[in-house]
Image 1: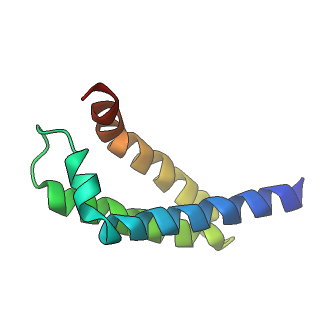
Image 2: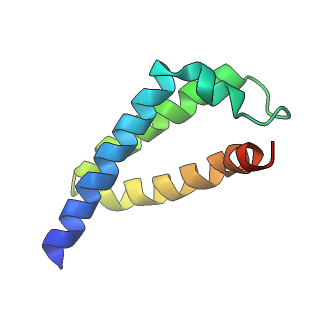
Length: 89
């Protein structure tokens, strides 16, 4: 069980780092899915990308993994409006 958690933590951490880096490589895609009522779409895309990279990296470290997990939950809640906007637009 312990090794499964470790592997899943690494998969999630690397996935978040790659997803966050993708915010910078394909910024226009993420700006297009931003709900129009949110101000500063470019800046919000960059901020969410930075948070994904940082939280993904923190998830890889055992000492910061628990705090990173809570941060990831908060991040997923924060970006939820963009996901809903994508589905309904």
